[in-house]
Amino acid sequence: MSNLALNLNIEGDYIDSFIYSGVLYLLDSDFKFTSYSWNALCDFILKRNGFKFDDARLVLGFSKDNRLVNKSINHIDTCLDKGELLSLRKDVVEIKTWPSDINIFSNKLYFSGDDGVFFINTNHLTAEFDKENIQKVFGMKGFSISPNTNNRIALAVGREGVFKILNLMIYL
Image (tube, helix red, strand yellow):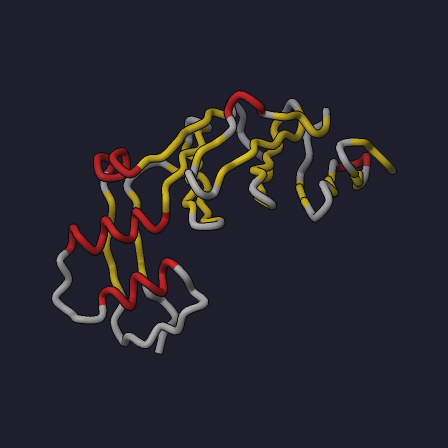
């Protein structure tokens, strides 16, 4: 039995996507992060599709929380068009740069662009961004961002090596 529960195609031009703490994040080719409540999205699919098989709720339940056991032999193949996606949107923030890396940790969305490494606080309960408070972490482009606990971040920055940032202070 496959672990695939939901095969979801989303209409649009996206360069990255991920689910974190019940929020679907999409980064489009205009460098805008858009957030969606994953549970609301799954509920919408269940209502819209009117599934013929009885265990559709089990499949979408597993899609919402993969700690559950997927006892269904069925899976769901569906898509969302731009209009449906727009109706489910929670928030959007423009980052204005092509990111060389993206990472999310402890409700902070990190990204690296030509002007440095930044983070945006996120709220997993509302799926919203703290757009008024985009913070710069490092003034050089990073190629790999590895955040960890206690505000520690390791950044691979090319020939300069790897920097460790602790509480937003730089140490070599």
